[in-house]
Length: 100
Ligand SMILES: [Zn+2]
Image (cartoon, rainbow, N blue to C red; front, side, top):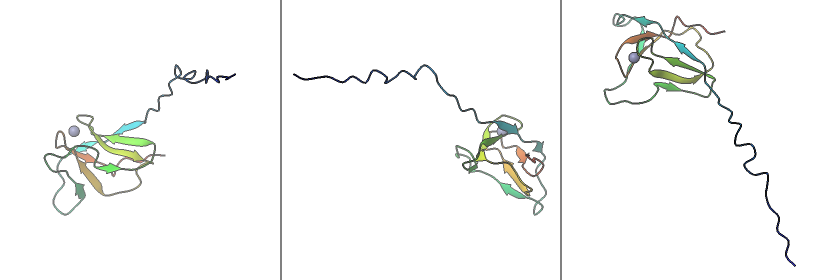
């Protein structure tokens, strides 16, 4: 005689979806910095995706259009960095954003 073991529990948890929503922060939009004053991270015209990517819990989005500029940071410490949005080309000030 053969006995069949069924994995009856498989899928029992599937109705409880755990959404992990990454908190996001909008960066302030600034005018184009004067040459040599700030470190500007800009993307080429056909670039897609975040300019910076890490493993942290936070994402930073463009203050004008909401494009995700940085994904997975722990927070922005003091930087001199300006991020140019690949989508709308506006300049986002990452130095003024202090998390914690
Ligand atoms: Zn933008």
